[in-house]
Image 1 (cartoon, helix red, strand yellow):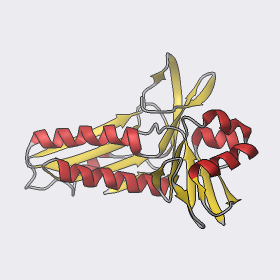
Image 2 (cartoon, chains in turn red, brown):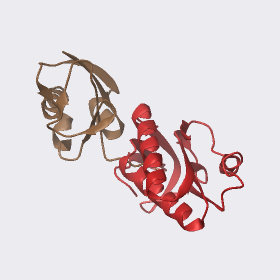
Image 3 (cartoon, rainbow over the protein chains, first blue to last red):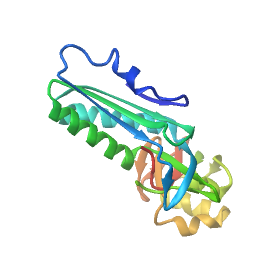
Amino acid sequence: MFRLVNDPIDAASLRSGFAGPQDGAAAIFEGIVRNHARGKRVRYLEYQAYEPMALDKLAEIGAHARKEFAIRDIAIVHRLGRLDPGECSVAIMVVAAHRAAAFDACRYAIDAIKKIVPIWKKEFYEDGEIWVEGPT
Amino acid sequence: MSIRILFFATIADVTGRREMELEAPAQADVASIYARLAQEFPGLESRRASVLCAVNFEFARPDSPVRDGDEVAFFPPVSGG
C-alpha cells in the first residue's frame, strides 16, 4: 500500500489490518518534522510532490524491498502540504516472519525515498523560508 | 510537436509557473528542451548541472529522447522523507 495524503498520518492505525498472525515482526519507521534545522527554529514545513511519479517510485521501492528482503509486505504513506513540528511526514511499515529483514527493509525504504521519490520540502523559519535540495 | 512541461520546487520558483505547453521540433531530447526553456527563463541556465528530469514519470538523462505528447518534468534533487 503506497499513498500520498494531505491529512495527518496515524501510524498506529496503519498497523491494524496490515500485520497478521503469520508475522513475527512489524517494523514501523516514522519521519517526524523537527523543530530546528540549519541552526534555526522551524515554524512549519511544506511538502510538494510530483504525485504520479512519486506514487510510481514508492511502489518501485516496495517491489524492490519485497524482492531483496525476506518480508511479507511493506506499506509507505507520505504526507504532503503543510506540517507542523512533531507531525509525522512519512510512515513505513514492514511485516516479516523475523525482525532482521523487517528492520533492514525499513531502513532501505527510507533511504531510497530520500534519493529517488520526487517530493520536496520547504522549511519556514522566523525570518524566511527555503526549499531544501537533496537528502538531509 | 507539443510537450507538456512541469516544474517543481526551486525550479518552479525560477520559472514562476508550475506547468506549460511547449512546441518543440521533432528529434528533441531533454537537453535541447532545457536549452529552449533557458532562453525563456534565463535563471535556469545556472541550474543546468543540478537539475533533474523525468520523461513520462521516469528519470531521464540529457540525451533521453522527447516525443510528441510526452510529459517532461524538471526539478531539483529530492528532499522528501
